[in-house]
Image (cartoon, rainbow, N blue to C red):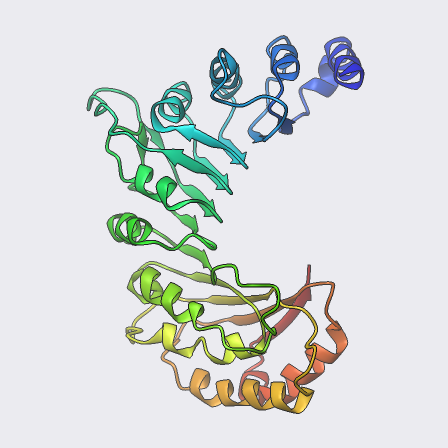
Length: 322
């Protein structure tokens, strides 16, 4: 806490620096949020609240969070590793009608039907939404008309590891406006080989139905391995001839193979190339494959360049690491 107090005092004496603070990560701590309430941060646009010593359900904690979120400059709110009653979250969100981005990571909600928001009440127009590795209860809450949010102009949707019936229903109501969709398979047991059988992928794809987003220009797929890339072709089933997809990114989250040979991996990737090349993607400009730093990037790039001659010939293939 001494460091926090020192930083607060420093920023109070340096308003020109305080004015340059646009992003802040804070853990849920009563003293920190009490201190935050005294700080002048006129251009703070992004606040990330993570789990800490306090619980958002403790007496007075939700009010402190609400005061922080209510800052008129805040546009994006991220909450991670939290559980909350739906009415508590609704009250926090109701404090800021200017929110544009709402991001949840590993969160859950105890859902009771909320009182419907008056049509005259200001609803925050959410354009960016992330629901990553969250409980199905949170997806259910997003459908509640009592939540003071308007998703009619949603542009970015990240539903990584969160596909459920409730989320599918929610996406079905907002799919017309989404331009960038990010999704991926559910978590699997660490003992499963990264080139093993990951049937969960297809279930996730069926739940989200990514080809039913008519305005999408960017797709980001988090996959476990080259096998998952090769098996992703079914998600393009039903792709309309007239579509606007310009950018497809595969983020490979898996580890270096612990058993299967590179020849097998190359064969799996090679099976993907002709099928993908035949897809009606008139606006496609790039297919990017991103690798974890834990993988041997040079070997991966070499493999895919060899396995994807058609994509290479069209100069669509790009690589990066994270």
